[in-house]
Image 1 (cartoon, rainbow, N blue to C red):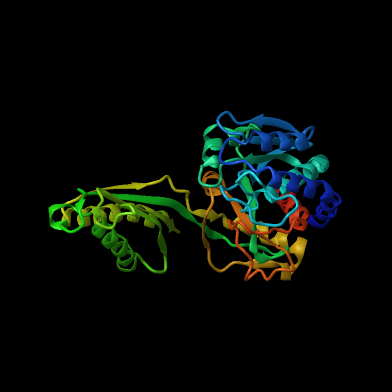
Image 2: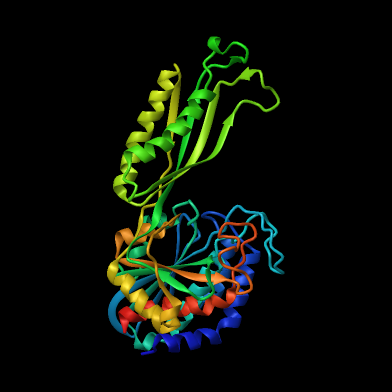
Length: 398
């Protein structure tokens, strides 16, 4: 059976093809759940590598690679969708359609294709099967949940015993692999609030029901509530991203309504539930105190991404074989980003792993981060990503 270093050598032999694929995907990004061009491009590169199952309600691909001997299934996942970001890089293959692979999903797809090719070549030594998901809709569209609902975990005939995915970051040095057991990423969702008042003349607010003042008070009160009601060693982040009220062309009109939206991050299901109970009570009480009403809406949030300890230990051992002790970082704390891979590891044990992709000419501590219109990812890391994914499957099936 091939070692991680053997797989890495083979992955570097594919680097020209994989980097070319990444750049083609980067130049032609697609958004959300419907990614027909991306799907076709990937299918062209996956032809002949195994059995393909396509999604019904999204442009997903599930590739089934059969090992020579019977055994369990391991799932690998690569996400496909881009962000609604207008690219501001000087890359020769920069996107020009108003969307951008600003989160590195183009590198994830290329790494997934590379892993598929490596595992197909190594299939005679596999005791079991590999299922590789190419998943749309990670960026807030719950693509993983849709694929689960469509039965994609059962494509091989047996539910996977382990699942792995990777994510590149510009904020990590090139080639560094990082992971940890337990909570790795936050539950991420939205809170949208509207205060419903009664508009009127700005000179006579007592004859109206001004929604702006209670909105401002609610924003402040929510921050205070987080400090007073929640354990600070199990953090909750609530950051208001936008506010909307009135018309900036007229300062003497009280509007009928005022709204704000916030992103919400939690690191435990307990706090998610608690926030969903306490925040509406607080907002409604403030509205009532001003003689108004309020509507409060939480979006569907991703789950807290919790890495299984055994799977995280396999990641650490495999990473050290690929990049050495110095190239692996055992993370101390989770990060506040959200990821719908959390829904996968809620169903089956697994681990998510981070890979540094900051170009070496840029200080990773100062680099534009993932989601920036100026984010730059070094695609020379793709062979490492492919070898890492393939090695994690081999670790279970050899």
